[in-house]
Length: 419
Image (cartoon, rainbow, N blue to C red):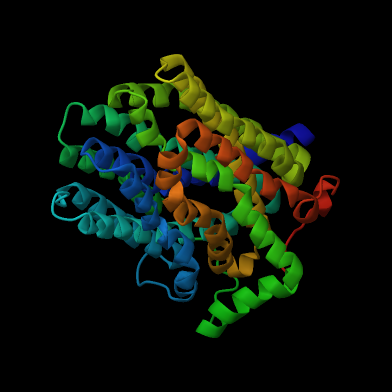
């Protein structure tokens, strides 16, 4: 009976959405953090300037400001969630195509403006994708579905981080960005074919969409515990967010060609990602989200040291493959557990707004603190930088006994009221 329940939780139409939804959610982000920095670096832009480009991701941290609007107002086509999905996906596609036509010699501001537009539409897409996932997944499928979503989110990195880099050795950058943007049609097709979920608690006014959504979270959890949860969400992924912020320039600085980076990233990252998706999802079904946060957090910290080892060894294809493989496994497991924790902490009545608030805290380190990575690398060097990233991953683990106790029974882990 337990085996049948496990299979039922893993194989259903909801997992198909998680599979493709994760991909289309991750694609714009990886275009911004892998393809754009690689393009800038090959065009001679400095590490400090590229590091500051991580600030273009700030819309990911601001999205809770306009998330209530997407919870409250329904567009006149496709429904509350799917209408906003389609608009966001078309916006991403258009602005990605425009990025390489900005003149780098005259001003980086135009590039930054176009990239911010991509981040805005990408963050808007994430609001509705997260809300849709929270609405359609029952509690028993939340861990596995989130693991599938997160790891296919990371699979999207193979397009701008592997295929696009290989293409860049053979085509001009305008063609490369255009081909990469076309993969957004995966999301457009998904949006057109999925069903609109039932919205049992759609807000009737902006007070319900904004004030009630945020006050419900802090009232239900308690102000002190809610603040600790937000601090934990901020810190848990801080170390690996810093470590991966400038991964493409890091590989280029070690002397690897764009084709080498692309081929190794594709082959070394896929299988660990697939294993991480299955292992992480099944583990969260079997042992619960709390224990997964502990175990995956340790693996995540160790994986950062793989980058330090690569920096120490230098230009070595096998070491590059090891570092990428370990990163896809460890960081992917940690991300899956964190997003599952966030989803579990929200109330489906206010899915879009509360998910936007909590995920904003999760991405704040990669958007704000990462802006300093270029300065830190130039001051300390790559190897020492990765040791600093490892230390930065520790504080989040220290909060686990409070926000996700190890010994909490699976059926008594925190579940939102009125779900």
